[in-house]
Image (cartoon, rainbow, N blue to C red; front, side):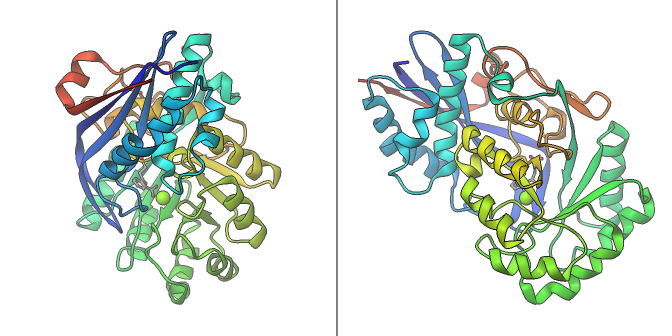
Length: 369
Ligand code: OSB
Ligand code: MG
């Protein structure tokens, strides 16, 4: 496949409600979309970098810049490109996994559309629908949190993840358990907000039968996570720390986690995400699909990935209306707590022209040679 050119689109998506985590609050999603044009088909990619470098080092304007200045020129120089060659072609540029993932995703979509194959089939999905959870941000009060959780459960979500930080951990978890009972599938995500010295406080969460605690410590605290794991009954899941399949293998062999949150952007793309899945499956480590408040474009690909056999826990793959009043694509809907895996060629979805035009803030065309 030869790339004719790539369009970078900056899209401003108002969130239905602010989303607060230990690292900050998001009111809008500032999305970078890529449209890869080839003689045979077009392909879409969504970059999951956020506005500010708070979740990880990447941020959306930086991702756009590294794509324009370095990554795209490298790809456009090649006489032909396949999805599997994108990662290797870009490997000499250090870091920037979310930027690389977006490019690989767009090439993958174009290539699969040209072949008439769905991403779900290409990746090896075995499910037609995937169980959906919802990630609930830090609230202003326990009362507001309970109302929000009640709303999600009324919609049919199958598990609840609470964002926690120091000062917002045991009490919200206790309140949700007391109100919604012991059968609720409940987990927490700290986004690296704690230190190993907080082990005693985190052990208080053991009383609430949580499915897991996600990323309690810093991204590079692998051995500290292993130490913490020995102090807790609650299983540790890693998100930020798992930057590659190699990192997953290291974390597992160290005993740093017993569950992995897979986010394709964080590991450099859907093909590496599948390798993370394979490593975890080989070690009997459960995985689930995380989210980065994606639009329908990124959501389509995440839901396809979540169809793989090792994804045995509900993901943060919520329906479109959990995030946006108007999604960029036909909305993903919740049906009995599940979201359907798209089965059309490539991602199986495209942006709705009028919606995209309305929400696009700027676009740049980069022509191939
Ligand atoms: O840590 O999982 C996370 C959103 C943005 C950045 C990091 C995280 C999240 C979420 C939301 O938890 C997941 C989603 O619903 O997309
Ligand atoms: Mg997380």
